[in-house]
Image 1 (cartoon, helix red, strand yellow):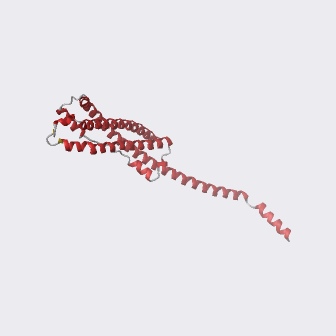
Image 2: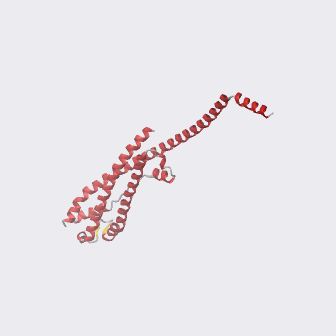
Image 3: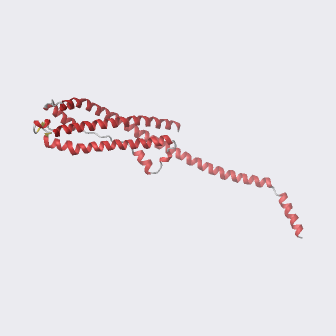
Amino acid sequence: MGKKKEKQHKWIIRNYNWGKLVLELIVVFLGVTSGFLLNNWREQEQEKRIEQKYISSFIKDVADNISDLESLTVADSLWLNTATPNLISLQNKSLIEDSAKLVISRVLQINKMDSHSGTYEDITNSGNLNLIRNFDLKTNIVDYHLALKGVGFIDDHFYKYFNDFVMPFVFSEFNVLSGEFKNAEEINNMRFSNIFTGYYSMVQQRNSAYKDILLKSYKLKEELLLKSIEN
């Protein structure tokens, strides 16, 4: 009886449609694999769209920075050109009162770069920086915004100098309304000389920093545009 059952079992195995079973397994495998691949493709496409969105936003931010920096570098360069003769006269102790009044009007000019870095703040705060797949581009984006912070530090230091030294001197020694010094001899004092020389040095430092970040802006914008075209 046992042998009969064993023979029957072997007959069932031998006559089972193994081709159909293998085909069914293949169909299941392909279905699972294709589903996985499709889902992976969708995720990659979504990441590409988000990356492109960030790239476009970066391009706008950098373009806005370029526009501001071009104006600021021109303004600082013109300021230095017009103020240099006054500085030389001050060093030679030949600065006349009318020129000293121009010096006051020049040191009362103050501007600052308002960097456009909203996209960078958004992508870092959201943890999406790795969506920028090109490693070199991602590194350059980070380095660029670190450089922007450096420029911001110089601007903040300049404003502190302006508020701590320039304005107190002007309010105490110069009548802004009449455009006259309280004491004409003040232009020969060390305080006036230090105020102007310090301000001049600050503009030089800032102008150099602006020019440097402007070159970095041109380069990064070009890289971003190339990446945008690739996508």
